[in-house]
Structure formats: structure tokens, C-alpha cells
Image 1 (tube, rainbow, N blue to C red):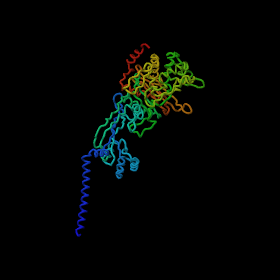
Image 2 (cartoon, rainbow, N blue to C red):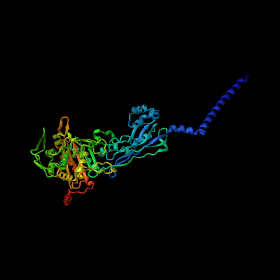
Image 3 (cartoon, rainbow, N blue to C red):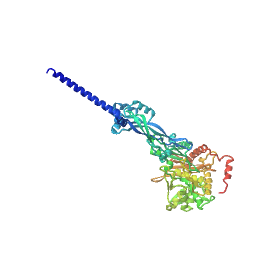
Length: 570
């Protein structure tokens, strides 16, 4: 009996030892089973936690000027993202992460907590390289970098209205970036990668689909001419305290838009500074009454209809003219004038009498064929069509005031295209922004003989004693017309708010460039088109002709030769 306790202890010891051996055998067997016979299972479990399919960002296509200079490029940048489930497990690290990202710690924690059910949340998009490096050095759990692309515009505000801009996801929002978004946008790729516990990619496993970059687009813009036009327009708007301004330069034969600028502008590289009034392209979206710049088309309508001839005269005495209950006035009494003098002196009375001498339909048809009051078909987003009422509704006073630019509305681009027809022997070109597009056939607007007659008249409108003399360009013959229009409001036409304009082309002997300058609401005593817009035309046109190597036609000997050449058959 005395041996019973010892035997009982031995049994217990053996049972416990057996249980330990059995447990070890089970664990060893399970380990062998998983490591040897079920490797695929373990690999799958690991991959499920660390193997991810990630997007490969695609490079957005570049936008280039006609000479191959970059106007819009996409550069690689890093964005900071986090897996909230992992990052919230290290709350003590949030303060230093918030400091690096220039965020409030509370806001950062709330953002993560509100999205705790997700595995991917952006914390800061498109950070500077130094910020990206500091984030990576912190090693905060669940925080990593994502490679993206950011759009950059080398010319900044100079070409902002034509190019437009993209959003943070590199999608076009305005301008040609929006119009050409489908061509410029690339197709993202995809690949399988292994991430570490911090979310960093440590190994590429498989390329699923390669990224396909967007297409590069070449515009008709000339970067040099664009800068020149912007500089001079901005200086004029500031000097005259104007509300806004626009300028368009077009090739009279091809319709190529060589420059299109506006004021006020914005820097598309800084999305935070964008304002609606500064981001729209006024040259295609804003309407104005063209004032006296329309008078050449009144003359063209009269010549085409046969109600006038180039040598006829008009009596503008005594300086005012009654049409119904309305009085039309000139600045002074010009007496009897021919058509050339009527344009040079910008006589409203002469233009009104000319319009009243023909059927309404003739005037309407000429203006309509010249593209006034209808879209140019440029394809630019938000382009305005303008307004030209049907002649059926015109009264005599409507016809009279329409003759000097009231009662219709146009855009600067429409007016430039119409003047291109005068410069191009009556054929109006289609505006073109894309260099790869074919040059479309122009629209016949007026007969070649009438176009040549008008070119000679408009050249006289830029002589020393005309309203447009400040538009002259040294070494070149210029043809054009000033315009000044009162702005309308709730109480009728204002006595204090004006739009100053100049439309013209050069060289007059063999026109190459057409330009329209519009200055909206210049302040002070100088508000006429000849005082405000014509000097801008002169400065821009002078530089543009030389930048484009257009030979001068107003030097001794050359003028005589071109004049003789112009005496060919009409």
C-alpha cells in the first residue's frame, strides 16, 4: 500500500508527458502538412494580404505650338495615401505626419476615421518632391506614395484662355484641354505588385496591361506671337484702366489662329487662383456690338447690290440726320464725301444713308455671309453664336443703326474672320486651331473686285488724317477700321461706358495677317477705338510681321512695284 502514491505520480507524469508529446506531434504534423503538402494555400494567404493590382498612370499628351514648343506637359509627381485600418493603429504617429503634410492633426484623424472601412484614401495629392521624401522617411504604418501626373503650362497666363486647364485627375476642364480631352487622355495600365506592411511596393509581380500615353497635339498658335500679343494687350488694359480686352490674330489664307489673348487672365498652374471671370476665353465667348468696324460690310453690301459705286458721294451735312424719331450724328459736319472718305472719317450719317438706299435683304445677306451673328465652327468650347436679327423685322432706324454697328452682336473671332474675307479676295477662311487638320475651303462672301475696292478704301482709313492713323506699321501698308460703341444697359445706351475696337490686316498689298483688338470700358477721356485699340494693333502687328518674316511692302521701290501689280484685271 505504501507504493501506491509513487505509482500514481508516475502515471500522472506519464500521462502529462504523453499529452505533450501528442500535442507536439500534432503541431509538427500540421506544420509538415502546411509547409510541404499545402504550400499553395500559404502562398495564397500571403498574397491575399500583400499582393495587389495597382494602376499604372498614363502620360497625358503634350500640347505644342506650331514650331514644336511645349505649351502643356504632364510631369510625374507623388501623391500621399493611406490605409486607414493600419494607420489608425499608430495614433501616436499622426501628429508628425500631419506636420509634414501641413494638415491639422484632428482633421487628419477624422478623415481616416470616417473612411476606416476603406483600404485606400488620398491624404495629399501632387506633393512636392521634398514632402514626398519626408513622408517616406517617416515610415508611418499604412502610409505610402502613389505616382501620378500633374499638368504644367510653361507659358502660364499668356496662353491660359486658349489651352484651358485640367483638374487634379488630369482631365480637361476648359479650353482646348476640354475640347481635345479624348485625344490627349492616355489609357492607364495595370500591374500586380507585392506591398510590405507599410504599403510600399517592394516587388513587381506581373504586368497585366501596359499604360498607353495620350496623343501629342500641335496647335496653329505661335508661341512668340502669342507672348507679344499678350504683353501689349495687358499693358493697354492696365494703362487705360479697362475692364477687359481681347485680341485675335489669324492667317488670312489658312484661317490659322496664330494668337488669341485676353485680359484679365489667370495662371493655370495654380488652380487655387482660378476665377470664372478670368478663366473664360472672351475672344470666343463674349459678345459686343461692333460699332464702326461694320461699316466696310455696309459699303460691300451697297456695291454688291448695285445701289452704290466706288465713285459716288454722300451728303452728310449738316452733321445730323433724322430717321423717324431718332437722330444720327457725326462728330462734325463732313459735308459731301465719297465712300473712301466716309470710311476714313467714320461717318455714321454716310453709312446710314448708304444702308437706307438698298433693300434690307441685301445688307442682311452680306453680314450673314460674312459670318456675323453665327458660330465660326471653330469647335472651341462655349463659343457664342452672336446675334443678327432677320431683316423681316427691321425698321428704317434698325437698318440705319445697323449700318454703323448697333443692333447686332459678334465675338472678336467672328469679326477677325469677316475681315479675313476682305483681305482674301472675298473668301472667308475657316478658323483652325489644330495644325494636323486639313485647311478647309473658304466661304465666298463678296466678289473679288469688291474686296479689292474695300482693301484700298480701308488702307486710306489708316492714313495720317483718318481715325485709324495710330494703327500704322513702319515698313508695311496697313488696312483697317476703327470702332467705338456705347454699351447698352437697363436704361439704354450709356454715355460713359464704351467698347474700343480696331480690325485690320497687313501687308495691304498682299495680306497675310488679320487682327482684331477689343478694349472693353477704357476709363478716362480716351475711349475711342483710334485712341485705345489702334496703337495696340500697331505694336502687335509690327512684331508679328517681323517674327514671321513677312517682307515689308512700304519701302521705296516696293510700293511702286506692288501698286503696279495691283492694276491687273479686277
